[in-house]
Length: 480
Image (cartoon, rainbow, N blue to C red):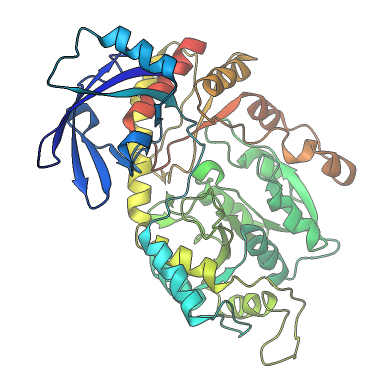
């Protein structure tokens, strides 16, 4: 908590010069702030060091001031307890003179930097309200509602594929993809254990058996050498997971799949916007599955999509998402209600307009954080993610590893103490969860086990500012 002493000089035009005195000079490198009146609200605009911060205050005497979207590290509130006024007057008595009116004490609290945060703006609100105005909340038609169809067209153009079918979650996307390929009882599907459990759950829900494959330590995607050893006569498909937005080794996976007549279902739930050899992830296999959960790069709150260039599979997935029906109650294949409501589709549709900006902001933050952490890599205390000529990340998460045992937990606690929501994805890995220990006979997955004990994901989303990134890097450096 940092104390800021505030004084104000008034003018008849309601444009006032504010001078702020702060005990923490690294936080306020330049103390001059302007205040201007806009309607009934005050907008605080900082010069120089505060140039990109915006503060909103409805009542100067009762101020709760929050930051604009480009920074998530500070929350400011005005203190009103008598002892605080007394303390402030005592501390800044040398600065007060007849030109200034003493306003109060401001405490600056370091607020939590979340691991991910959706950017919901006026465009999204307008789209959602328009759905409510039209009173068309959902549609049971085969092709979905108006905004579902619009979202499908936008994603199809972005991904450069023939078909996109919108469903109500990334899990539904994976499940419907497995069903569409006719995978079921007695079949095996190869996938990494180092993933969110939905990847495996979708296989089990279809009646098939998940066969867990180890990962590599470079980008935590499926290990090619181990994949080759896990293929049997029962194998029907491979589900490579583009974890953290890191594309898997799709050239090698495609060669193996072709040699063994296996289908590829890409789990691109975390990788919308990631590129492999200039092609979008989720478009390199027979089917690609995406998630629009609230934490994802693009969100519908809840939602998902399946991308494919196969006409028959697209039609089948449209039936699967709608109880297997085409016209009326004519169920033709096994299906469920996997439809996305129009409200959620409206939210994601509006987000599509700023998808590239969201990706650019993540890339900018990742580049800055890389620069800040790079000196630590030379001492081999930390490994940071890096792109290759073939792989371009969407920077859904910035995931690092620590070479020494137990350092990860020490760093995580330090970051939490500094209000930084660094998160472990995933510990335990799927094959070590209680349920899968009972149904899947898994041999040793040494890289998966190592990663689960050493990875730590850091926030680089669009609300993270330069000061937040410095705070993250400083906290890590002190901890290790």
